[in-house]
Image (tube, rainbow, N blue to C red; front, side, top):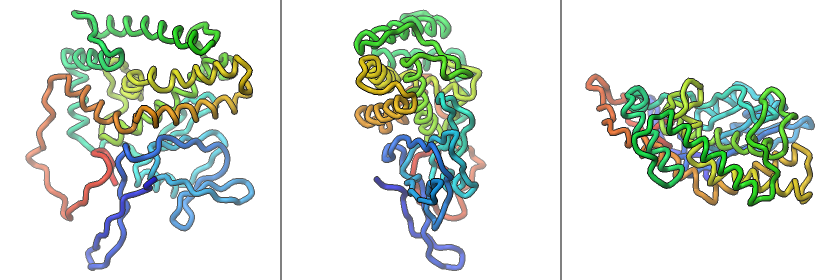
Length: 325
């Protein structure tokens, strides 16, 4: 696995130095979870240090997303390095509930942000994008002459049916999608598996959205949340990736083929999600898919601003369009 792109550059004094730039998201591994220890940069390496002082190097430049659990402390130097190589860092709770996100702040492509915002604010363009999302999700055209709210209701019914079908396939006792983010322990095993799985997918989708230069908060079907666009994109692919993975693990738990201990269940879900991401080649598909969905709005992307100036020093492009590296 590659961890960075190296280019040879010269500074104003004519000295040669090595510049690290982000690699494209499609060439990265998906997600790594860290549970206990301190994350730091030592000898230019991104490392996890356990309570005994043992170090494990993390190839942060080759990851799309790094998930930090409550037992992790992280230094300013580590966050700075993650931001520089374009790896999204996410703090998650025991339930996979997002607490805070950092790393790459996004907004590196003003033209894409403006295009996304224009499509979301134009109700006709927004409806076209939502219809394109429906078609991408269910592989069929949505019903004609339906509003966004009506399409949302139709999707909700179909989603409940899909949950029930997957539960039957994997032999899972299913009473619906029910969970309380404030009380993780109150959820049953299938819902815990689903929460852990969707947490993985949300992190990956947010990393892709930022890498492409879009805004996670500007959604189309979902609105009013910091991660509205993340939910839009994740909903399109979750029933071919993480939802079957979650039900598969839940089924093994109910048949007694794996332990019910929650940490072990979460770990199995993450491994199943990782394998699913690889099998479906999700990292290669997700950024082009975003472009196709926004193109369905029928709007033209904004032209380059006439007052824009070329950089004083020529740049060697690498990574995705939204990477600041």
